[in-house]
Length: 421
Image (cartoon, rainbow, N blue to C red; front, side):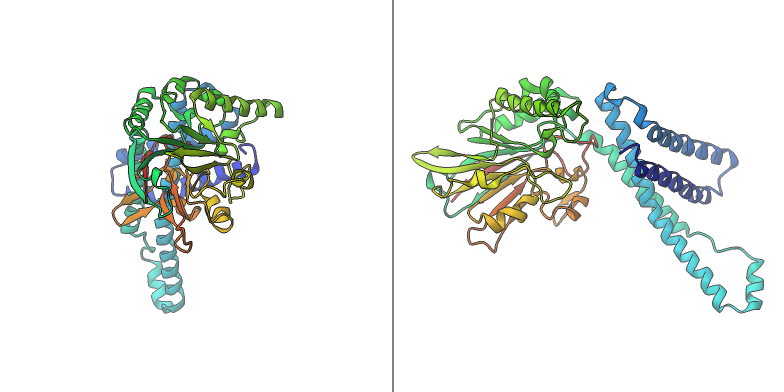
């Protein structure tokens, strides 16, 4: 994409945005001394030009040879600067529209004599309030993204009881730990990751379920973390599925065979960890003579840009005899698109994928993230009240991170679910 016309259009847009933003900066610093303005302007353009040059030469820089943390931090700052300026410019644009309307009204309704007098006076100035408001909002966004760098390993336990009337009595009280989106290729702090795994182990769950995206792209990303995640265990087993990043679809491979071999190697990673990878299949979980079904499918998304490798019909076949069913499916859009209309006997679906966009607000009475405009179900618990079984979906906010090396408001999650009757 980086050599496509779109890439150059994006760079051109960023240049225009920098010029537009600079006009407001000149206005707000007009009362400052010449020396102060030179310092401010120089700092602004040094940073802006450096960011633009990095984007221009990005296709020719072999970033894969650089430290992961350095690479991801640089990109996060560039993206943060762009978004901050873009958000601030919304306020500037509102002000410019106001000025344009005011100028037009004066041209149409003010008498020629008054227009002549007006022509000798000052032009319509910018609003100081809107200009500073834009700077404040844009600066707050950039500041929050920088602050979020320190949150990427601040794991949080989310505990809940989920009630199902037809859950076999032997399984009432069973504790499930649900994790998702490890993205080991993004990790740079093994001790911090170990603390998250220790939190999982301290829960002493009966069952651990992982719903995909073990890596960012390649199976070897797990090499340094095998000993950490191999410690995860549970009496009833550890089960896993694949997410969209596990297939290596987002990197260039020398051949189709190399890509296929990467996936086979990743399957061996799950096996070496002691995790039972479910590939469009189900297993029976037994306790005190009673059984429930655990289904796991490959990635299946209702969004066009993500793959549909999953085959729900294969996983579901033969499960009619089980009174209770849990489905592991990486992408939560699968629940509304296929599970609800076609599989009303799936009681609980566990997903991940969205990460809550690693940015949002979750406080009592308010739950918001930009990702909600793409995914109707994006974090936490959802219930289908129209179904007599009250089918439930839980979307984990992700154990790891991808792209932006941080989290703002949406912290990494370890879900602890207790099933009760």
